[in-house]
Image (cartoon, rainbow, N blue to C red; front, side):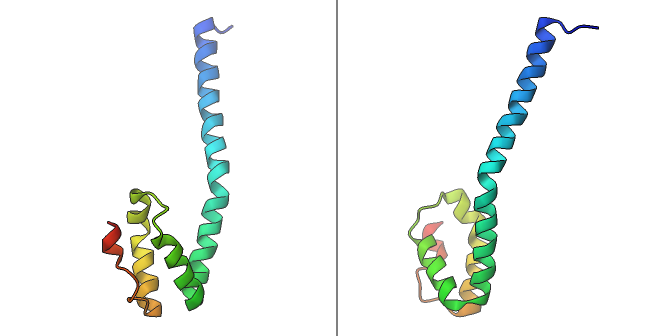
Amino acid sequence: MTETPDEKIARLEKRIERLKASMLSNASRPRIITGAVAMDEARRNRDFAATLLAAMDRGQDRMVDRKTITPFIEEVTELWGLQDRPSIAEFA
């Protein structure tokens, strides 16, 4: 059975959406991996944690991202005694 033009268009539109999703995933993957490595290092190295938190405190991230990473920031702040830096609440 052959496809009608409408069926072919629908099939190709679905394929385009899958390809777009794959492209986004491939673009995000290096950032995710880098973030995971940075988080692990911040848990092992106080100086790195302080530097990472300072970079985060510059506010280059989106507010929704900030809320997502708040538990990590609080964990590292407590782990290394970095409470003297500005509070995470100032960014919420």
